[in-house]
Image (cartoon, rainbow, N blue to C red; front, side, top):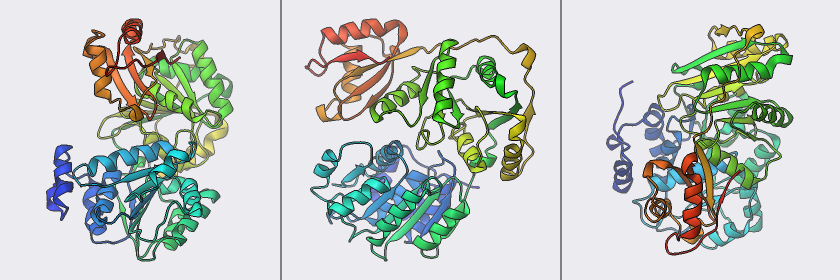
Length: 460
């Protein structure tokens, strides 16, 4: 399909200015197909894989509808996890950078309500949040939807448990009937279509490049003896040696066990599951995304909303019961036109799951063979970075550039030794070359950042 420039759309000049500053020139397929009807005010149900530009699509749609001079909540985006809410908010803020005085507030669970209440003292134009927390604020009267123009459900297929559906309906009951309702998702099971029928008005359905048939992803399935599953996983990690690998397990118990066993075998590994507190979860994700850990073991629930760029491989420790979950797993690698690798282990008892995946993808699967009697010796790839934390963040007006300046200036480190910098409200994490970590820690503790002394510590 021929690509079209954003300038071909009737967008506000300030939005075109922001797109130009971000070097967003040509629209992705989901943007080209969904933006014209959204700008006309139509309800849309859009299916596109993660990384296809859907956030920018509905972000431009809702920013086109709001009136910055009206200090009322005019757009609401609902999504399943805090991480996804933060990513969506970041993208919409980038798109709104040239619009004057647009206020956006994130309302997600797992954290204190106090800063959210302060942020809601003056109505934000846009709210991005999780249904449960949004409903709490509606019940308290701290959020009102009387002037809502656009409601977005992102990752709608993941938000269909009973709690979400109940909460979303309760939210919709408080929104004007005249609102525009947008659904975006990687897959659209019947339950989502049912929800769409209840919440949308004659939606236009748009489907582009689903994760199921992403051509740039090499996908191989391996049958294994269930008792040798961990040996098989270590073999795949040792043979393929991916820069980063996300390993999916069914249960948190499996995830903990796989992490423990891989760590014993010398792999640079972390785990993500339901027992992890939010702060530790943030740190695990930061360390994996910045290269301080090569392997992340996670349950499907814990991995919701993760947006890890340049993920080299996904590995299924066992196949999921639902083939749509398989599609989500695979869609996490090979993003934005890059190649990806998806490897899946299954036992003879999981043959029916294999058949379900084959039916879902509509293609013959590649079945590989593992030399179970002569698996490769463990060859873990060590991480080249470690993560340090400065106990100061956005509230202290500490920006990534300030920290980079302190490291390359007063601390005398080469810019190449500093990796990804991640800023939170009260903390800033940064990756540093392992060989330079002790020097960086010593010099930052002895010196100052922006003229102030902040506590600096390693994250183990």
